[in-house]
Length: 460
Image 1: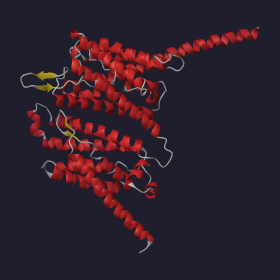
Image 2 (image 1 turned 90 degrees about the vertical axis):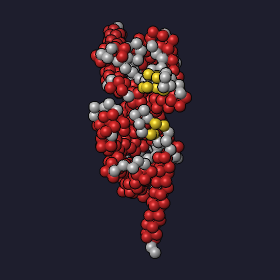
Image 3 (image 1 turned 60 degrees about the vertical axis):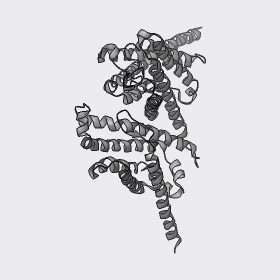
């Protein structure tokens, strides 16, 4: 037998044996249920991770095959539904994950690197995450199509006007949580596996990880405080405690992850930095994605802990007779304080975000020295805008902070979510433009005075 034939046989054996291990691990993980989502569906601990790693290691065709087999295993261990629904939900969705590593690593590099994990580590993690997000989007589309068929009768009973809307929200709720866990595990795995070559992406991944952690803590502590003590302005203590909880998180994170990522933990702040040319477009999108994932993870953990502990969510609706939550609030933002007026909500959020981001731009401007008190000032600025804003909208000034709780709370929080995405971005963009204009005018004036002094010296 020739050496080439022997090498080919070894490669085939490696592919099949590794595929079997990945299938077994993926199936076991898919049977571990972390928690149930409010809209239904169960979140699993990154069950699709082995499929993605396998797709990267051996290419999209083999990844497709393993993912297809995994979809059949899901049919055996899951619901007894029609083959058409299985094809839409499981087969299309999971096989899309088999392509997650496609183009993330060149074919010649894949052949030269032995072992699935080293091959995984040799990929571009940014490309890998991008393909994973696309694969989950495909899975969501397939799930929605399947849900329209499967949930048509249940959607009517649940009071939804459209089975399509019900399916979109139902499937999106637990798939987003699944994606959040998977993305975090992918990044952690990428960082802990030793690299055999110089890798320029590790620094940016450290920044993304820091932003995930910071936003997770912001939602977990800030919204968690609101859930525990309430944030009704008429009750005073809960109102002020919630405002300080959000502000103190900023202080803590500024002095812990600030040196890594700048501690934006807010897509609106990242937008202001992008406009101010303090970060690149790819960095901006990476920050936004991981900020949102951190928020979703924080809100999901809060809902799980409060539910498991039997603790009342003071921002939701509790049925004392039944002894259970009728609806979860999770500290989500809303328009109840402005009587449902979206325009009023937009105005207050734009103004408050403008104030907050303007403070951040001033404190972090390298042209002006503020010593080591920058984090404290920014934290107090967030307390300031919360003291006023809680009575109106619950105070967002941060799209990521609003997205996570709204996904789990559903209802009005999800319906009005667009306000708390559009307004903070608009307020931050306005703050960046105004600050840049003001400081530029000051700089031009200083240069003019300096030029006049130089001309006088020349005449003498």
